[in-house]
View 1: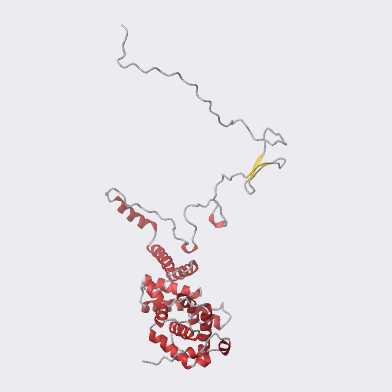
View 2: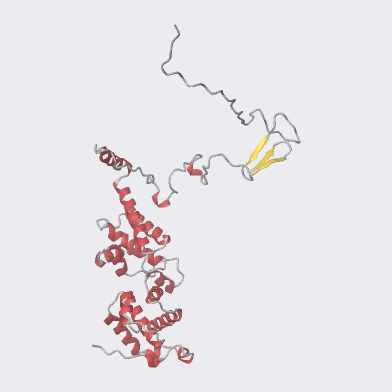
Length: 354
């Protein structure tokens, strides 16, 4: 009795022959057509990217891709096999582990992530190293907010690291120390900022900032005349003390004043210093009053409220400096300016004190 399938299989289609597959012939060897040596001496010149016969020097190929490791070393103390993992080495972080381990917060509600984060925080860095890393991050963040270049950020980091190593400001708030380092770095890089600008950026009181600055100034020997690298007293003072002429560039740019106003204003400030006019006033007050005085001379209408907001001083202080300059206007305004038509003394108006 024949076995009957309830569901017979479909008729099988005739099998088509598989297409032949082609691959590289591993038995083929590259030999030099000149030497025809069965055991060729092929040299890969990665410096020039050529494939050269080692016997006769015939170039067999060009643009050879270098498949070796990219590890390189340029110093004898780094070893023969430096690791390329992570960012570039930072000389300010010497002796501090620069690789971080980040533990995810997602643990399914088991609480394991929190325990792992605590264990990683205890095992990675000491407390002093964590403080340095935090300070470096704050310095970079504040310099970016102030639109300061990386040079100033590096100088501020060097100052902070030295003050931390020598324990110069023990007990002072971290923000105050960082603010003082940024203030000194701006002066050293000839990009001065006022105390008020630094205080507004870092939210540190002017009193605490002044204390930290005085301590760092004495420790780093930054007082006028103490630097041995400067050849003249003028260069020494200009590198350590912020003058009103150093603030004119930023103030005139914010007020959208032409370059001729800045040059005339700078000459007026220098002439006033030589004659002892407005001595004892702060550089910010002198810069604001000189800009107001120069704008009146060259007929550039600028509201005193605008100058006050840019310079960060009161309107009364600007008017006081203006009155001092007005009383000695013959000493401050050069005759060639009047002859060339750059300025007009009749444009000056007397500001009576209230």
